[in-house]
Length: 454
Image (cartoon, rainbow, N blue to C red; front, top):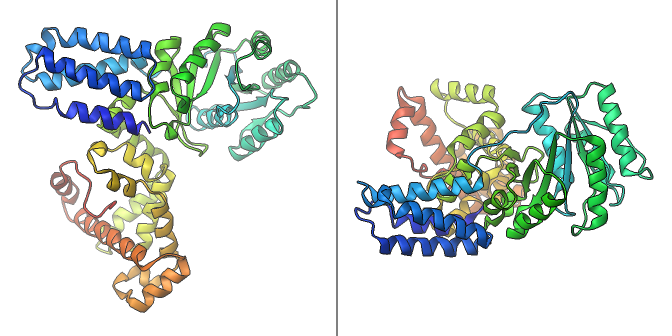
């Protein structure tokens, strides 16, 4: 996510770190490099100009030129200004309405609006403990209503049945009455998308808005379309009063133009980002966390939240107890850790939140972020006998051939697995000793453990 922008800005800011003296000349050079990075990231030109003007104004003041650590002070200014342009803080959904609180979903065709509606329902059920009803008024796109109904079933949410021959307005009104009568906390209404903003589309959604009087009107936009995403949201907001934006497909956005442009151009907050295909892959948008990632500092807060949300705490406690008792760390335990990584979005999502990732060589980053590695490792462990999983030293040449043939992998893949496992096993031994955790953290000094990921 935002790899291109992160790499360029991290490289620029790295040159500032530790500099004892900052002059107008190197401030100017830094701003030029930032400008190029932002334009390459497809950030809207008006946003680029605004950002650079504000950074320059503060950078040329006493704050930097008279600072004891001018390089770090300038980095902080850039950090703060990026946060300001994206909205300063997370803006939560407003659900303070007489139930049901109605959320109207809008967006162009292909933006991921229907999937996002289901993701939002899942988030509200799991995080806010709300009783949610989903409804679709998209009577134009083939199987659109059926798609939302299937997604509702997957997340155990209620779905308002309807006849595709009915008008969107009739379906919406019927859904609202049903939500009121059955005591739902939230009604999420999906609307039809179009390939472009047209008068007919806007009239229809304006009528729906008037009939439903939603407390939230959210515009779902594909972040991979860059500054065009922000301009589309801006045009839509002029015709319909939006309360917020959801950026979908952020996991595929290597540039970052939409994330940096939407708030400034529309004046509306980005409330959520979609960062994957899984139904859980919708998270509240925190500008300061995204800026931390963009500047190569990772996002430890989100990483910890992801661990708390996805990791089986009971299993983790049992594994810790097993290691501390001296019973060791087996390949079955290693497989369990791989499955936990998958639940947290895979290696790419984890690595994206770790500090220092932009400073790693590209070939190592590619290797670390390849989720196919997890799949291969799991397949090879599944092809082993119970004895081999507990005593991997038994795995000789003939056993290796049997395991790799059974899992459709190579001897090289298996050697890589055993190397990774040995690294994890050594870590587990250190953790099992008294004071092992604190000692290991001191040794790591914030770096990745050797042999853990590559």
